Length: 495
Image (cartoon, rainbow, N blue to C red; front, side):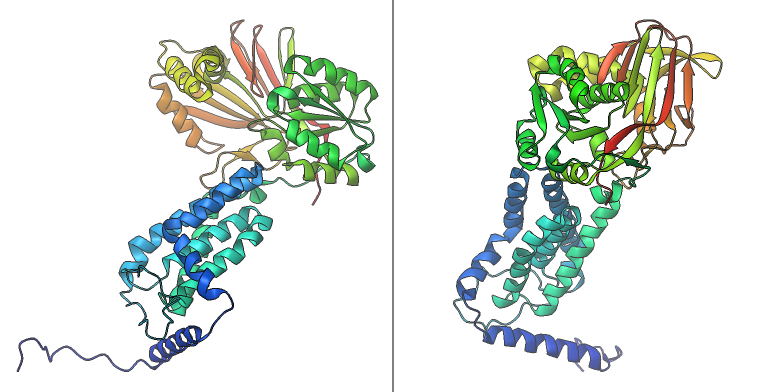
């Protein structure tokens, strides 16, 4: 008896289903090898090589980002994130779990065969997984761009069988894994469509055919020229005024005197100024995002010129809440957030250095300077007791977190202020991070969160910095923050 043979180990029994599937897989592979697709011998091998190490998909993502639309940029990022998850799964689990040899190349014509044959195991196909993950990730964020990418992804997957480096089942398994990776990424970071609030309460607003009756003020400091041109092309009867940042408030007041609908294109600070004017004049507001973050417009569901024009011409709008703050003679509104403490200090410090070293370096330097200070930036009476605070934040509406995504509002007319307080003490950075990762209704020694309709802060020293919608000013003593339910009418598509 040979010592290399162990007769005590039972031989595997017949597996008719597995055998039949493998036989079908081989027959399909040979059928593809026997086919001659027009142009395939020249195009598909090159396409297959271009997808090595994800080069093709990185190039596609760069092309999407170059379109300079928010949705295309998000689609590119989501596609690459999905590709990364799929590649990681293939390399750590897929290739090591099933040690399947590559197909024999005898049936494949030499002109199709790759010059450099892969040496990893055959199951599943990494190229197919990457292609499916990228295309699915793009489609989940932007169906239109997904439809453009899908044929290329399908061709890459098919090329792996056509060039003889994979069996059909390898490609199908890889594609399924890639699609699953894209949906896994969506579970962690929801798409914009999942975060758009319901279109309610519906408001009666005039339908503006061709934009007639719309007077839009665009802030030149926000770099809005491209969007303004697109708006003029879509709504030729609208009046558009491009103004320097210092002239925006005055131009808004003039526009309100002759407008049927007041429009604004700029960042959140510019939108805040326009909302104040619209409230005083009783006008509906049309918001075209033109800043860096555009929190209000995106939470509202208006992302680009096409969405706003559709709402204007159809006469579709909703009513939203407005936050209001008062401190002595100081009176203002906020559409997004109001804060006291660390954040206004950070903004002030950042503005001191941003013109010299740039925005991001100035932000880092400001954070270091503020968090290393040996004093708390805010003292206020909360619950009848005066205490030091690192931060008091009040959101106009409840901010929710979905997966790993930043907080977003799913209802702009809930009648509530989302109040977060970070208590004073040592290690401010740790306290702020714990508050940032906490849910909307939590309490701890470091922070607290409640939802209220009105908030009064006593004991606030005059001159304390206050931030609202990215703008900074100084308090004049005690501060009152309240909601104005459904006070502002804005345009947005209802579907």
